[in-house]
Length: 606
Image (cartoon, rainbow, N blue to C red):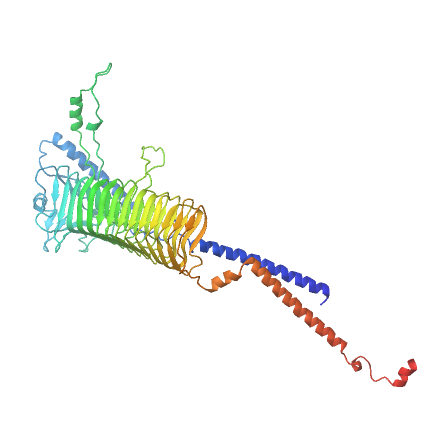
């Protein structure tokens, strides 16, 4: 090989080494960036588990829901106009709605009981040989009435629910009472005569119960295989209507020029004759089970509702739903598990909700979902309020093995998670969409797949204090948000105890104890974060093939290593060339000539 060729080969080798060093540096910088962001990152709103799909017929069931609303509207209109238009209106009556008729129970002092139903509807509320009752028409009670289905002890009511036909029990503005006993609960379920079993097909509708305003008192009861598609027809549905207090809208009746003014007394009398709205739902639900319904318990426009020892399982959509305008409501010592989407939902415009001693587990998406965001962010056609909601508290509860988040909080204010165990989700608690004044205190987080707590989306005024985090990739991740992480204990952490990324102005990480074997205990790659006084003495950086490669795969290290290899190759090549030349200098003379030259010939030449 000529000198020029050797030079070109050496130069090419050096270029290759530098390129490899740069590429490796870029690759491992990406790895470190992903590592500093919390391993696999956070499950985004459009990623991860979204719950199990609804197994009914969306188009058909939505049409049936609209049909039910029309039926109820017709029956209410008949109830408000009938007494003044029909002479014989006195007591219960029947409206021939399709596909089955509706038995209407108007206002009266005494409650309507099972005995009354047997008398008023002997063919459609019929006793069965096993002691149960088969309801084969709709029942609707009007304002001022009470339907008591437990006055004579526990009863089993099977509600007709067959192909093309289903029944309902609806109360409007009155009181619904259902009571059994601890030993023998009252039972309400759907019934398909063709199979002799509960109705498992929702595509053609399914029997349901609904309370529209008024008071509910349900104790020691079991509801199963009821409801379809919407919250209002979801199985056990409590849906109030806001009072329109017309009297409060009347001003003074001062005379004015021009058109005459109605006198205050005259106007008050006209307003009093208006059919009042049923108002919000209130009351008690205790020792109740809901199994296999479309929604476990659906509540909207309710206040001071108390739910205790409620057990919801295997709902087709959500478990317990506090939808719109639910206030001052408590859920105690209750369970919601195995539901297709979320275990407990606190939706927009609901506030002052307290959950104590609840268990939410094995749900298809989140354990508990809280949405405190405004119903609108600006002027709307309907003039929707723009304020945020909140005051939601979860205490002494267990949130375990849900497919996505343990607790998800989107927006809202004054939210507390305290004294609870949160175990086995992708992310334990997710705070997002500008939630403020969130306190997470004295909880235990175990075996989350990604982060125990993820804080992002401009969350502010949040405190993470006195919690214990075990066996998780990243304990707390703060991204473009602000929170105080203080006096927590982190153990068996495989990546970071705390990660700060993006704009973390105002975030503080102080007084924590971190033990683990990840890359660093506290990774601060953010603007504005503050870390101090954290105990990381027990942190050990784990030696793995990846960590070894990362240690040596720095660009400058690779360049020096390449140069060393280049020098070594050059030295070896030079040694071989010198050895070759030395060998040529020692070639025997006999190999260079035809034979031995006589001395006389040599002398003759001289």
